[in-house]
Length: 424
Image 1 (cartoon, rainbow, N blue to C red):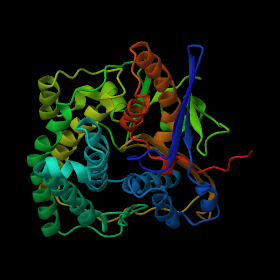
Image 2 (cartoon, rainbow, N blue to C red):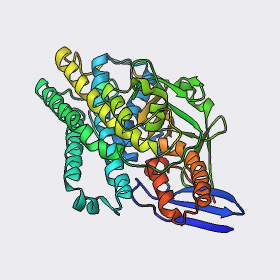
Image 3 (cartoon, one colour):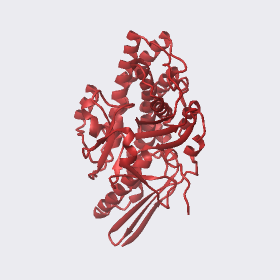
Image 4 (cartoon, helix red, strand yellow):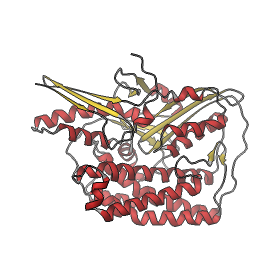
């Protein structure tokens, strides 16, 4: 039997991607084809002064811009040997948490939920589930406001800079942040339970999962890079462990770990750090019979839902702690010097790495960024091959929709991933 399934310009994902599955004599091959135009972002950074980098780097994406900015800042700080006090770290985490909640809501409620409730878009969903949609947009607005107060903007925040912040929130603004966080926390369970109650397709495949790990919680900004296979390494050693491959059909690099595909994202974070999840999120997992580690890529959706609850609680706690302790200083002193800095963080879609080498004038000589979706392409392809085989064995004919559900479960951000020049 020969069959080709071609999905063109897949809808309800971030960016532009085709996906092709070819079935021939029982063999299945899949291709994740990133279509974004040549961007060469790293090349644009060469020769730039360090202070320009965060503004430019964050523009690679309009969805995960907050974490890109903070990751760029942290990599530059590593190059200069800068260490921040805990209060400034907490403020940065609040900026990032606001971005994560925004992103998870966009993915889960606008992209994923219509598939499972029989709708083509969130506009159709609003007609049958108006109360839920209004609530979802309320929480997203609250998360936007949280990021805006501390970061200066809801989209592309500007206050996190090398050495600290360009502006600190006043006590009145921190009180407002705490109120926003408490409201998000109070509404978070209501917006995620419709996702947690969904019956996801029955499919699992063993693979390697990679995420940040530390002993102080669910890490977002600091930690070692840990794999489910037991290998742990420092962010500075990423280049010895993660290898890129170029494919003629894609404008994005694909990545391998020990020459095998691997997965990053919310599912990986919970597979590696489930014990750090908040009690409320764990209670929800138990209520809906969710177990981690999980080998179902569709559980990435439910892991994101649990993270919304966890991050809402963490935002409330961080803001209340800052109100009690105050913020001691806006920036720390540092010296511009020649340096080599790497930062590994957790973007909404998974492990994110920025790496910069600076000369003694503080200008960039080498830049490298590894985004979550680029790391997920090979796992996405291998999952699709196994999933299609399972569907064919079960006599499923509507392969297109099922493949789209699988791809959307990965929450791909194609815009972030497609950044190199493909030679034909």
